[in-house]
Length: 195
Length: 408
Image (cartoon, rainbow over all chains, first blue to last red; front, side, top):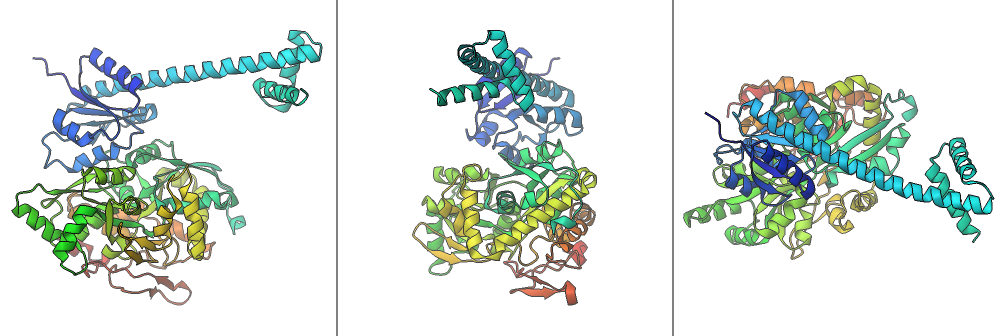
């Protein structure tokens, strides 16, 4: 007999990441019973949806509300009682490093819970690396533009070839222990002064 | 003074804090250069929740934290889910909390008090009347299950004959959400650190009915918590941290105008991001109690240095542990003394304080509750001046007979 799918609640203010994690959980055959953000009435939602697992962004202020549910077992038939699977400290460390925290109903088999947390951790990591790549692409595009402008100034005013201009920037960067983009910015600023 | 200290093993440190007025010693230590004078390059990292602070401390993303004193004890006892050994050798101060109720509840309490001071007894009358009318129990909030806010609020209620579990509903709300939740009518009252009580008064939605001081004079509050393994690995860094923070605490208590300067620092965008006057009220001891302008002078609302405020009393630890047992957070047979000894480290405090000329009590424990005014403990050069320590119900907590006291 197959057990009913675990009921998972997602709490994350980042809508894009939340959708990514929800999709992956659906794909893994889990039931995502609620998706909410900070201060969206977490207690009411937990009472209404009776999740087995709550996956919550490590940075959410609402985490302390869940911590308190360890102490509310008398009032609530489906309390969220523990931080992840307390015996598994490596899994906890990995989750924290990925920015995921998890609260599970007491008595669930650790194996079933682990798979939920693993899916969330993988998606949080994927999302973080996408964000990082995006940020890097943005900076490198901005830096390339700076370097091109500086090269143009050096070629025009210093009568250098493009490759000489680039080597001049690189040498200065190495001598001064700065990035080429920093040196390029300096060249542009100086050129502004002489306009 | 700092030249006598060994060089810190770890010059670059990250400390976590929660946006509260009682983080002042850390903010002052950074902004006024105390950390730098001890050879430490510290960054302060504001955290969204106590749980996040705890977890980042446990995986080493933070070197130390402005932590709820009971939470440091609870972590070591495994009450916090993930067991982790923390130590504290420094109390960040005494007091700093208050109990606030919604303005409409305050008016009901005022009517029930019938011209007498509005106390928890008035709340008991309101609760009895509501029960007779078949109304739902009122919801109150604190900031964390294992916090002095929880224990002070429960103590205040219980001393007036209110059963916090039967007569009320107690939930947790993050401090920055308290005022909004009070406005929305989700909660009717709370116990929280400043400035989140004064802010409710400032916004015209709440009244301060008691200072933490009224429940327990000069009660312990936050500590500087570090991992037990961290403390062992970086002893010189730990001593330098303590030294810098004690100097900042001394500066805070040196002159009234320093409190105002601290309020200006804390008001900044990176810290509390609130109007200076909201933070200054409790820091300067001029409290505004209700939206109609009632005031109260309470110089001991925050104590950062005087009364040996930085000393990590093991009797404070035992009182908090006893509250955990009292309210069912710890089993009655838990070894409280062992936990107090493992987590509270007055021995490390003394090493740092001896170099600073700060208060140096010879004892690790004292009986709590017997003093209405300032008093002296110890003899000769070890004499220290301590503050009043009275409980609202006049009880005396003697750590010497903790076994008997635990028979609740």
